Image (cartoon, rainbow, N blue to C red; front, side):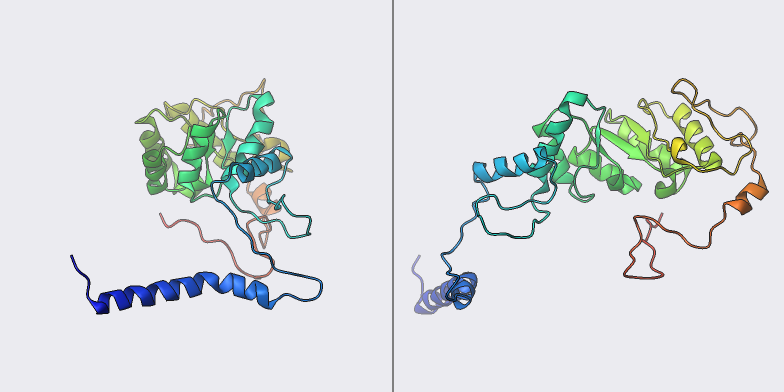
Length: 271
């Protein structure tokens, strides 16, 4: 098929614009040259095995931010290519034979978590990636997790948690429960969930040892590594309203807040 002069002209114009656009970094580098600095260009091969090994080595040394290891110039490390950094970090854990590693990559990087599962032997567990039923379904479709950590406070209640666990059970994925420092009411709900969900076969998280107090006069106590499911009416715990008042606070502080935005609070999922 013959092309017209107009088509060849359009091809030439697009090619020229593309060449000019991709040359901008080099022009900028040349423009910044002075008596002490000269620009010689740079080339970063995304498939260069030496770069990947260097990133894994950074992870093995305990770093999460990557410093370019092929220059003597000082520069700020950046959080890039966390997949390779995570491989190095996971290699550090192998001697400890962990049950799983929780949320090693960004919460929306399901493809990265799937690749991480295929690249090493430590089970990958997702937590922040699995707040809603839709999240759990996406994890299953992407084959991104060996374990899913559920949280009734994020999922929208006990029944939503049961349904999320059933989605995981349908493809043979075990689940467990994430902990956010639960007091007796939430801890009792967690234990009832753990006793009623067939694929909750891993120990649930708890932070009892970090609590300064509770709202129940009979707080839970770990006995030989176990917590007993309450047997009383309802959730099976008694609440002391004076203790509730004692632990009441007027504001919330924590890692999820932003000191640069007073009064801001992170948006939770809409159930």
